[in-house]
Image (cartoon, rainbow, N blue to C red):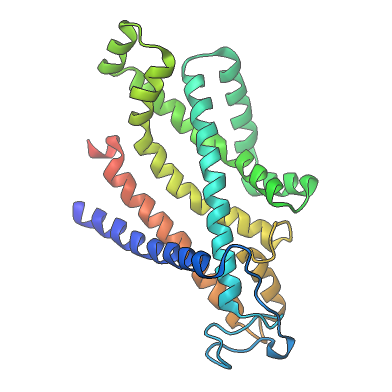
Amino acid sequence: MMKRLNKEIIFGGVILGAYALWAIVWLLTKGAAFDPGSMIEHELVAPFNSGYFMGTDVHGRSLFEVLSVGLLYTFTLSLTVSFFSCAFGIIIGYMSALNIRFVSEFMDLATNLIFIFPSILLAILVMSFSGASTTGLILCLIFTSWPGYARIARGETMRVMNLGFVESARAIGVSQTRLFLKSILPSILPVITIHFVLGLSGVIISEASLGFLGLGASDYSWGAILSMAKVVLLEAPHVVIVTSILMTGLIISLNLFSDGLRDALDPKLKK
């Protein structure tokens, strides 16, 4: 069990680390505002030709540069969305576990409404009204992501509140805020962390889907690149192949890493 677990964490972590290193090196060397140059005479150059490692896209831009900007954008957006979704979900889930009537009713209604419909359809609906902006996209993805964190936070909070050390702290009059920060939050963080890592891949897929449909906030979204490449699929398949392989590798690495974390950190599995 432990041997298989370690392989999942190590294999997923190595691949994920390679993507993170790629994004960090690109940020330090080129900056976040880098704009790949367009040379129409170099349109759809195949990989390893004319000095282009991954070839070029339909605008004659280096596919490596375009995907690098897209990777940095993907990491920034997915981490931002997951962080705020996680924070909001933990707060709502904790307050719901305390049986605060309004909060519990709001959470039940909101989660049921969001889970009834596929998240991608809700995201398309929200983006259709908010327009293609980074702020709108972030708010849209947070709106569809926080209920999952809230449900897990509520369930784990209710489990932890029945433990002896928490009941003892409540008996001696520890305030709810101190109890949450010192006892409950550290106890639920392992399970929340697993969902956070797994949630990153969900955000990446949702963002890429919106970009593919033309509802993204950046021309360098990997989904937008795939949408552009489908027009020249037969003429220059390398754009779709390279982008798809890189996106698949990133999502698989996140899933493997989260599976390994689940086996290592989930107290239910430890038992």
